Every structure is written in structure tokens, then in C-alpha cells.
View 1: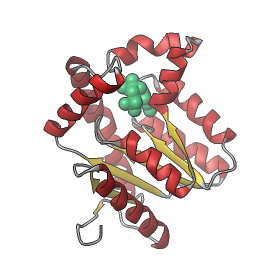
View 2 (view 1 turned 60 degrees about the horizontal axis):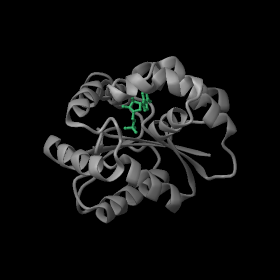
View 3 (view 1 turned 30 degrees about the horizontal axis):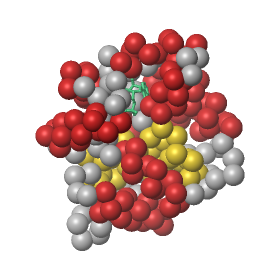
View 4 (view 1 turned 45 degrees about the horizontal axis):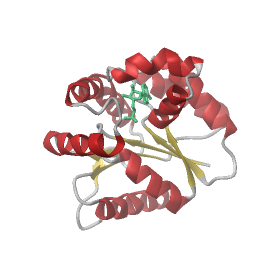
Length: 207
Ligand code: AMP
């Protein structure tokens, strides 16, 4: 069972790309944001507990997220692997994931970082707000989500980079098809290559 992580700021296209990659590689797409939104729409205890936090663009406490990811990983069977979209977002979440994977005798096969500049993020989120009507896609809430990303998720990515985790950076700015092709290439290359080096930039020629 392969384990991939896709990370990037809000509006980087993680969700769209994850769905396409999951189909291509026969993976289970695990979007923690989607799972939380489902809990909210079903008004479960977890949903009620996290609704206000999410609407303010804040992160859900690590203990909730760790319990969720444990449940998801333990119940997943019948696929080639798992694509984690939006998890981990903090260092304790990364540590919890490492412990869980150790228990399962598994490792992280590749971490993909999708980079997108702030002006493109703003445009995409404003567009998505009109299409999907997500309550956390307002400009005001986006500021908070970006702050959480910079303060907690960027250091998490740096933590993986410092560990020499298998990692690749992909420019998420081009059109959906181009980014998908680059991601597929990165994942295929990542699974062929032993000792994929941390933080390597995928060049245009390679993609
Ligand atoms: P997303 O759909 O990935 O943009 O996530 C939407 C919201 O769900 C985030 O702004 C957080 O409030 C919450 N969320 C999703 N994943 C996590 C996570 N791993 N840790 C904490 N909060 C999360």
C-alpha cells in the first residue's frame, strides 16, 4: 500500500488534482476537509464541535485529526494506496502519522508540494466561492486560512524536508491538465527512483 501526501495553500488545486490522481493510480483520496464538511452537514458530534472553527478558517485540533486519520488508514483496503489531501497540516499531525505508519509497517512514498502565488490563490478562491458556495471561501476567512498555512503547515513541510523525506515541488499555476501530467510524472518517477531527494524541483524539461 502506497502513501502519498499532497500539500499546498488553499486554492492550489489540491482537491481537483487529488481526485484525478486517485483515479489514475487507483488510490483512495482522503480529503480531511471533505470528511469534516460531511461531519458538519450530518451534524455529528464532531461536526458540531468543529463547525465554528472551520467557518473562521482555523485548524481543527490535532487530537480530532489524529483520531480521524487513524480510523481512515486502518479501514482502507482494496486500493493501491492512499492519497492524503490536507493532512498533515501541523508538526504533531506529521508525528502522529509517522507513528501510525510505523505501527502498520509502512512509510510515506512521496510528498508533493503544489506551489501557487498569492494573486492566483485569491482569484481561484473567489471563483470557487461562486461555484461551490463554501462558507470558508470568503476573502476574510481566506486570510485566516493562509495565516494558518504559513504558520503551521509551511513548518510541517520544512520538517519533512529537513528529514530528507521523499518530496517534490510542482508548480500548480498552469491549467489543470498540465499540472496533472506533471504530478503523474513526479509520482511515477518517485516510485521508480530509490532515494528520491528532498525538495527537488521538477523542471519543465522533466515534466
Ligand atoms: P480544505 O478542504 O483542505 O481546505 O480544509 C478545510 C478546513 O478543514 C480547513 O480550513 C480546516 O479548518 C479543516 N481541516 C482540514 N484538514 C485539516 C487538518 N489536517 N488539520 C486541521 N484542520 C483541518
